[in-house]
Image 1 (cartoon, rainbow, N blue to C red):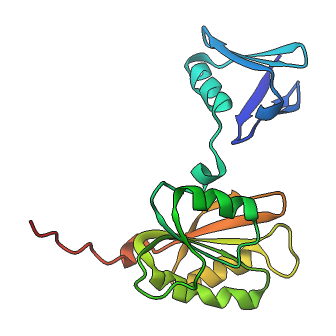
Image 2 (cartoon, rainbow, N blue to C red; image 1 turned 135 degrees about the vertical axis):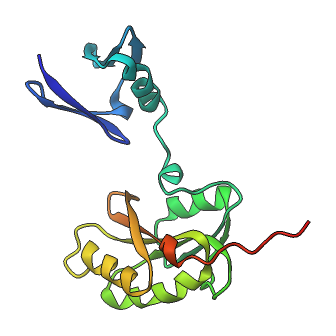
Length: 196
């Protein structure tokens, strides 16, 4: 049987003669041997011939990236949050990073800023946030999924107007989507020389 397997961050999707969505959390076991990936679910086994990729896929299924991994959050980073209503994300950020809920100011040298928006008017803050991050930092703009009043294209246009480029999209929760914005490489200031 020919199927196309897509390895997503939280599930494996099978397309073709056999179609299925296999959330990692719903699997009873995962094995890889001799180029075969075997997934166990509800007493059944699904075997995929993946060749050398089988072990890598098994590892990703056993240890999927966390939300903070997907958002690029690392221990010890300086983070600011504005209007964040997702208490789970806020708690996870506070567990690994130095988090400020005060509006960031220019030159704050923040690694990441998470700003939640709900309307076009909220996007005006992006220009100031650009000045608050380090040159290789990022601004994550969180907004309601599938909103009619605020679309991804609106957020991307506002980021561009603020001198930022979008380079990643993410799912924060069932209700919130996120776009990551960074300073374009060509516009970044060179790092100051270090003195020894």
